[in-house]
Structures are given as structure tokens and as C-alpha cells.
Image (cartoon, rainbow, N blue to C red; front, side, top):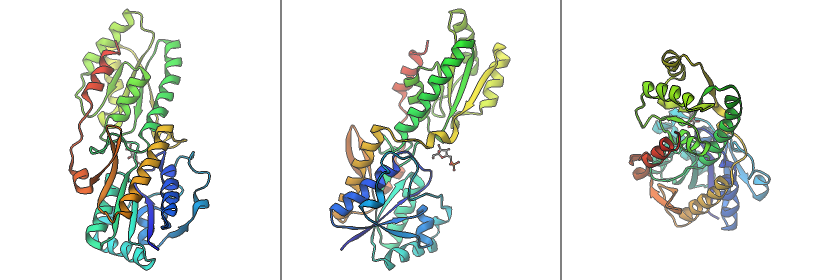
Amino acid sequence: MAKVAILTSGGDAPGMNACIRACVRYAIYKDLDVFGVERGYKGLIDNHLNYMNNRSVSGIVQRGGTILRTARCPEFNQIEYQQQAAETLKAYGIDNLVVIGGDGSFRGARDLSNNCGINVIGIPGTIDNDLAYTDYTLGFDTAVNTCISAINSLRDTMDSHDRVSLLEVMGRNCGDIALYAAVAGGVEYVLVPEVKYDLDEIASSIKFSQKRGKTSNMIVLAEGAGDKDEICTAIKQKTGISVKTTTLGHIQRGGSPSMADRILAAKFAVKAIDLLLDKQTNKVVGIKDNKIIDCDINEALSKKREFDKELYDIAHNLSL
Ligand code: F6P
């Protein structure tokens, strides 16, 4: 019987468990033997694999994190570690691997396929939504909803005190979490790495808004867009107003996955297993214009991300 192993790698993202569950159950439905690898590529190197059945993934669809656990494994760019990982798989008679993770995880998968002959399919799992070939990555929707809930709470208290608040969110070098949260949360200012911003303009706009009777102002800052303390100090100098800061941090990475992430997880998993059954390798799955797609892994990794300037303009125009 053909065999497939599944691993999660890099930062965890809500929906990874739903995706593991779907991979395991669909692979078994298609008569494959399934193995779970613990702690990503580290588990492959260290031979930490477990046989999985339908019961191994019971009761996890609603849970954040990853039951397979995860790790970052920078040494996996060295061929000797890739070979060690491939030997582990071959010892179990496994030549198919599903990798759920971000761009670093995809690079590891590609190397394992090119250098060691393992069939690999990648599933995009990261809250950052920073992969150009797909409209959405697993975990992004839930992370944005977590940000929205923080924005709602902050708005209540900021409004009561006529205050200005800055919320720093994750995303590495990608502003999508900040942008989507800002539009959906109705915040006044969004600072993202993709667009240059002007603190003089923001400061005078805050002052002017108070004259117009606005009772609170909110700024969402993407972590890659600047230093929150420097931004707050500059606004205080220019306006005399103190800004209350909140860093949402790893709260964004956990929590029960949203409906959108659970459905995406199921669809990605089915596509990934179907590709492996079709003897394909070095591919990643994604969603484009609401359709599940696959894409060559090298093409996916080299594609340049396009920032959604239209949504950014909407955020700006609705904030006044
Ligand atoms: O890639 C996901 C992410 O949460 C980023 O948004 C963030 O910059 C980074 O991981 C944090 O990494 P760590 O969990 O290793 O601190």
C-alpha cells in the first residue's frame, strides 16, 4: 500500500489541525497508509514518526496549534540533513510527503524532492498571508478575526476616554493582517510595510479629527512597518497626545480556527492528497479567485507579492 507522511513546519497557524485531520482521513479513504511527523523537519531528521488512523485526528478540527507540533529548522538547507530526513522516510517505505507551512517550509520540501527523490506537496499554512501565488493562506482569516476582536475591545475603552490607541499586529514583512483588520475593524490609520506613511500627516489628522468631534482614534501597525515606540513618541511630540499601545503578539497565532480556515483546510488537504495519488511532486496548493489551484513550487516561491492597494485606499477613504 502506498504511504504518505504529513508534517507541519515553521510558525503554527489556526487551521493546521483541521488540515492534518482532513489529510489523514482523506488519505485513508483513498487507501493510503498515513504517518505523522513530529516537530517538522526536525522530526524527520530525528526519526520521530507515528502511524496515524482516523482516531488519531478525532476532536481536533476546532483546535488551534498543531497536534504534530512544529519547529523552525534552519539546518535543513544543508544536504546532509535532507538526506538524513529522506533516509528516515525510506526506512518506513514512505515516498510521499505533505508539508503544511510557509515559504521556508516550502523551500525544504522542494530540496527534499529535488535532492532526495521524495514526492512533496505543500499546503500554505501561515497567519501572514505572504505567499504571492495564493489569495489566502491557512490561519490568516482566524488571525485577522482575533485582531478585530482586539480592535473592538480597544475601541470601547478608547472612546470612553477620548484616547488614541496603537495596536501592533504580526505579519513579518507583509501588511495583510494589519490591512484586513483595519478595514474590518473600522480603524482610522493603518501602517503597513508596503506603503510609505507620513507621521506629520497622521498627527495633524488626529488633531483635526478631535476638532470635528471624534472621540477616539485607532492606528493598526503591521510589525514590519516601523517601531511602535518611535511612532508614538513622534505623535506625542507633534500633538501633545499620548498614544496607548498594545502588542497583540502570539495571541494571533492561537485560537479556534474560523469557518473559512476550516473549509480551506479541508479543500487544500483533498487537493494535496489527490496530487500525490496522481504521482505529482514539487507542487503547492492554493486558492485563486475562489478556486482551489496547484502551482509549481519554484514558481510559487519566486512570484512577487502584489499588495492590495485598492483595499488600502478603501481603508484610507473610510477612515475620515
Ligand atoms: O510567520 C508567522 C509569525 O507569527 C510572524 O507573523 C511573526 O513575525 C513570527 O512568526 C514570530 O515568530 P516566532 O513565533 O518564532 O516568535
